[in-house]
Length: 139
Image (cartoon, rainbow, N blue to C red; front, side, top):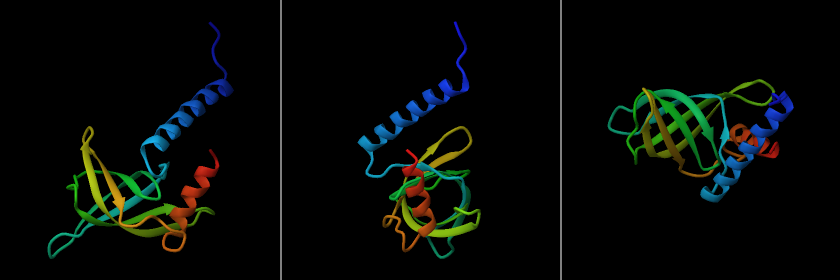
């Protein structure tokens, strides 16, 4: 049996990625794309807002997946400050409001899904919006 070269391995990976995109298209209103970003989540509960820090797993025009050390209760209203490197290498922070829709425990960390209060827009979150559009154009 002959070993695969890098080009053949890459082709297989891209086929799998294409299948994931097609599956997402069938289940979701918006496609998710990867985003390497830090996030500061503000829980809008009680007199004193609680702050959670974490990492972004993926983002779409309608929501975002986060990795957090502590859970966020479904239905909690949140404000997210996403800090990431935009096109051109500039570090940007853009803010989005939303609601937690799930919080799943995965090996000492929580995967938390946030649905945005309104879709990302080029006017309010130009860099996040641009990142999603640019990434989708590549596929």
